[in-house]
Image 1 (tube, rainbow over the protein chains, first blue to last red):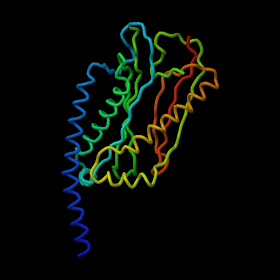
Image 2 (image 1 turned 30 degrees about the horizontal axis):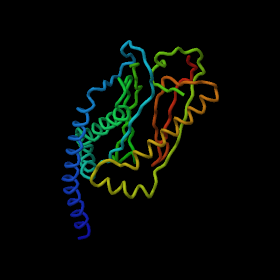
Image 3 (image 1 turned 45 degrees about the horizontal axis):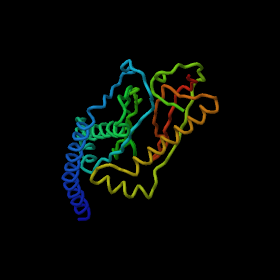
Image 4 (image 1 turned 60 degrees about the vertical axis):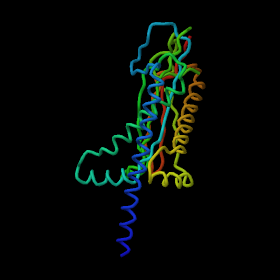
Length: 147
Length: 104
């Protein structure tokens, strides 16, 4: 009986977490796309070279974000890894974290002319067995040309 | 102190190399902040306290690296890289390293 109640509670959590989590993810994606469009004027590349113009200033810039996983994603990931399937729920999680980190880096220097040599790094926070969240870090060199 | 992650400081020339400088910090998670985090873990979303924590930790590691470079007499650090490793359960090490140089 107790086991049944515990199972019932986790099924309810699974469903609630699916609806709230999916809604959060959709809202986040909509926001990311909106902000990416607003910052499209700032070129961000992984090259180490830039336009041969006189440079006024250059400095290291970075942006980071930590995105938590949810109960639905955790449970689905556990099931999928049991059968060796593609963990599609984790793909959108890391994608969101990376794009958000790049956006934060760009927003911190929205007046720069270009950002070069951008590197994106991820680190998993939490226990090795559980997927409790992803941290993404984006860093690069912001270049300001002489006006 | 000028810091970049490319091999040079644009529009300046490097006169002296001082070698590798690095800074590292090990931070653990806060049990009180973790209560909020475990709640967030139910429904997903950004963990703002952790974003803040990691940002501060990175800043501290950079400060340590800058201090080391200043002791050597450098005025810029080029080719800076970040690395993360988990040394213990619930703790993260942030490591930042680069090459200290003097530019003109």
